[in-house]
Length: 300
Image 1 (spheres, helix red, strand yellow):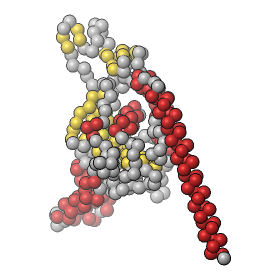
Image 2 (cartoon, one colour):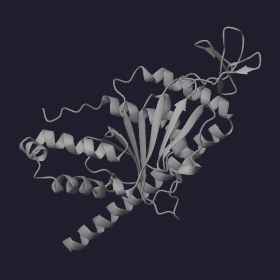
Image 3 (cartoon, one colour):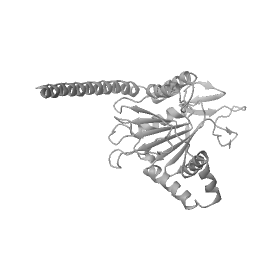
Image 4 (cartoon, rainbow, N blue to C red):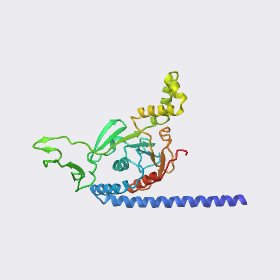
């Protein structure tokens, strides 16, 4: 009799959790539809202007910012695509984040992000450094505000036009064209593959093991911190100078790194985001505020 009662209570509790999750997901989807409809009715220039003013307002309130922001896309996610990633890249660029990486765990035929389909905004110069490595440079740090003049530059239609002393625009004067100088912030974008997981760490350790009899390695074995620094250097070389991520956004139902860079993420803060919510500038800033408030005491 008691066992049947426990079983009944378990089924009631399970039903309650299922209904609660369904209602939560419906609420998030309705919110996402409302926010998407709001952005859909506005022009791209208007959205860029709003985002620029929004980030400028909140940037000074943060106590710290990550140098390297990482993104993990879960295998069951169907909402994060090239457009969403492009939006996040632009947010990170406006917040002066220097490095951003993303790890897509989905198969090629199930929404896997194609690096070549990532859109580059008009005011950004894109340079392909490697097959999975892009570099974005802002032509003008204030190119997001349309129809205004900031820092001596005229901004029209979302693109910066430099105002020269002789009245020329875009470096054109008397038929002579001067190449436009790229100024402002630069962000490097990396696509993380499965190779950057345990395989890369194993390769580094294997290479160090092959030269274990040298005096250099014998000295490293006497000091654990020196050995860790050497591993960090070797991993950084193979990752084209990508530093360890301080913050990681996980688009998944549950927090999981899926084996992505196990050595480099030992001090990373992971924030899980429900894929059913609309990820806009407010959601991005909310994550940065949470990261800014979190203090790592390093065991002290």
